[in-house]
Amino acid sequence: MQPKVLLVDDDPGIIQLVQRYFDLMLATYGLLTADSGGAAIAQLQNDPDLVLLDVNLPDTDGFALTSRIRAVTSVPIIFLTARVTDADKVRGLGAGGDDYVTKPFSLAELGARIQAHLRRASAPEKRAQIAAFGDLIINYSAQQVTVAAQPLALEKKQYDLVAFLSLNPGQVFSREQLYEKLWGFDAVGDDRVITEHIRRIRQTFAQAGAQCPIDTVWGVGYRWQN
Image (cartoon, rainbow, N blue to C red; front, side, top):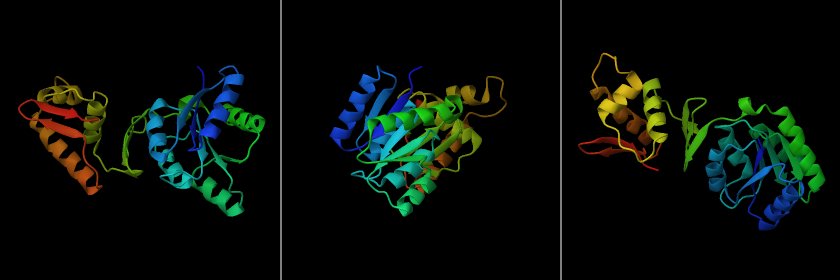
């Protein structure tokens, strides 16, 4: 399968340059692009194998964005930057970056570094199955939900509810359906536990300063709003 590289840079010239280089390499890599931190987080849903990250972005600092990316995936991150001081390198590597390429850069060097990092990375181990809903990130592999890179303290069944509803956005499920899906047909208990778990989920989101995407459809059940 063709590896996917996510390029995060607000300079259209850099994006065009890298795209042309990838085209000359006869589609060795697929290129995903983002011109801001928010767009980069959204692109993580496409499971990139490597991230090329500009340090200076319009809505965030590349080092801060690295911490958010690291909250959901451990794919290689190569900084593209004009910053060359040792302090900046230490800060970037400490945030979770793997390498630096200094602007202006050689495309041949960039290609060689991409190849080297992809060889080292074990794709099945490095990629996480994730979904992004703004600042809300769900890492299905790690069974973790984060808001603005801060993990939410959800109980197992609460996470299961969030995961199931988020994987079926817009679809309405009754309490009975959710109970059967998560507890099983033969479970002994009361489907009213769903109402209590969702109340606690909403409370946890509120404590994190976030809006819970689980919507109540009165008289029917619950659904996940995108």
